[in-house]
Each structure stands twice: as C-alpha cells, then as structure tokens.
Length: 250
Image 1 (cartoon, rainbow, N blue to C red):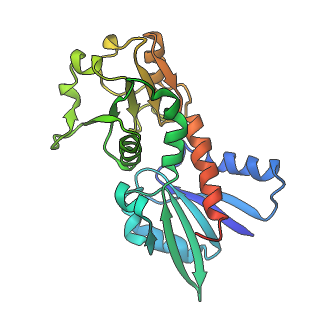
Image 2 (cartoon, rainbow, N blue to C red):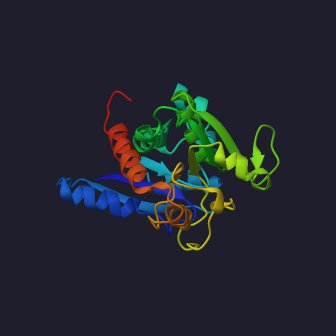
Image 3 (tube, rainbow, N blue to C red):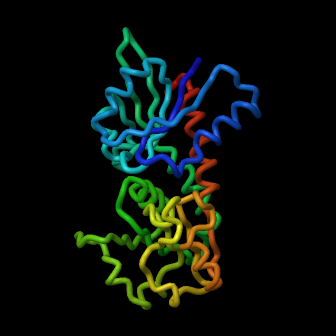
C-alpha cells in the first residue's frame, strides 16, 4: 500500500483527504491511501517519518512550507528561487528517507490567474508574506506582473495594511489573499483593507478554499468585483502533486 498525506497544523480546514480519497475511488486506485498528519512543530517531522516508513509522498500546508526545506535532500531551481515547497517525494533506501521538494502551488496559481492577466491587468496586490505568498509572487513575476506586497509587519519594500490607501487600491487590478484569514473555523474574518474602494475593475483571488466563498470574496462580490475561489487552485495543485509522486524521472 502506497501512503500519502498532508502535514501542517491545524488541519481541520483541509479537504485534501477527501479530494484524494474520492480520486482513488473514482479512478479505481486500490493500492493508495491518503491521510492527515498534523504536527504542532516542524521538529516533529523526523518522528513522523520514523513512525510511517511507508510514506511515499506528502503535501505541506501552513505553517511549514518554508520551514520544511531544512529537512529535504533535493530541491530544484524552482523551489530554491521561491523559498518554499508544498510537495515532498520520498524514496526509501536502506530504511533511510531521501526527500525531494517541489512546489505545485505554482501550477494552481497559473491555472487560476492566467485568464485574468490580460492587457493592462498586470498590477497585483498580494496580501501576506508566508510560504504561499512566495509562490504567488514568484509566479506572477514570471508572468510579467508588477507586485505590491502587504504584511502586518514593517518590512523593506512591503506595505503595511495601514498604508493601503484608496489610491493604492485603485492602482491595482488583482488582489490575492494568501493569509489564512477567513479559513474555517474563523470564517468571519477577512483582510483589513478598504472594501469600499473596490469595484468591477478589480479581481479578487483567495487561496483559502474552506469555505469556498470566504468573507473576503463575498464582500468583494458585493462591490462588483470578479472573484476566483481557492477550489480551482486546490484541484490544480493536487493533480500536479499526484503527477510528481508518480513520475519516475523525478
């Protein structure tokens, strides 16, 4: 039996087990299982591997997409440039795990946003500076977009939420939420921006997928914004993960 799973904490919001379990049933894949492996600290990762020597592949979610790189053996140029990974491929040799890191978020981001990036719609505000935001920023820069990044903390080259004026919001075409705000169970929260300054000229994309219609997206939709839920990205990055795990050349 090939074992796959998800690490992160907490994992109560995750649809990954349901997604892959349904995929296995739908495609008559009978030799695979996918489970959640919540770890409270990244240091628990080595213990997890010792307790589960049959693990073949893992997805990585918040808050470990950056920290996990301390524990991998092989990273490609993409992961090195992004500085974060959300897919691990594990090969066992003499009871020792050799781990390669990949980033399938890039695929999900491209599939979700490429249809929106056309003409002059190339100025993007990215809310958050965590592991997911690193993949968003890297991908959008590759697509030729100009990025305004926002954080709760003062950082060089990054705006704070207090600095997002109506004129700044008016200058962007797409706003991407990479924070966990709005994620189950805290479904009433949303990023602290001036939603009254948004309108039909804006596209809002939320990486949160549980719930699919987050407060961020619902409020934007009320203002006439185009919205993109996180479900398309979830499906795209999950299928890319499956491809990675089953590609013998990787």
